Length: 178
Image 1 (cartoon, rainbow, N blue to C red):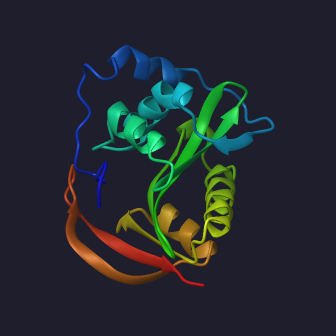
Image 2 (spheres, one colour):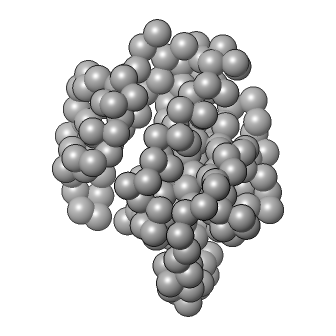
C-alpha cells in the first residue's frame, strides 16, 4: 500500500504545538446540526489536531495532505459543527474492497452518533465508487468501537498480534462484506 501507514508514525511537536491541542480539547460546544462532507485541504490543520487528540500514534499532517491529493485511492469525510471538525473517517480504496483507515471523533462529540453517521456516509460514498466490501483494524480492548462496527454489520475475521503500539495491543480484523 502506498501512502500513510496506520499506527506507524508518531506526531512530532513541530507538526502541532501542544497549545493547539489543548485549545482544541477545551473548545467544546454542544452538538448542533452537523454537516458531513468530504475533507478538503483547508481542513488539514483541524484533521491533524483531532488525530493527535484521539490516537497515541497519529498520522502526521503531511500524511493527510498526501491522502487528500490522491483522490483515486483515498476518501476522507468529516463531520462539522459550523467550522469545527467534530469527527473524521477515511478509506483506502482498492475496488471492490476498501480499508477504513481512521475514525476519530472529538471527545466532546462522542456517544452522539457522529461516528455512525460518518461511517455510514463514507461507506455509501464508497459504494458509489465501486466498493463492495470494507475492512478495518481496531484495538482489541476498544469495546465501544467494536460494538459500533458490529452495529454497522462488521464481523470479526481475525487478529493481528501486537499490531498497535503505545501501548502494545492486538488488532481485531473486522469485515463488512456485500
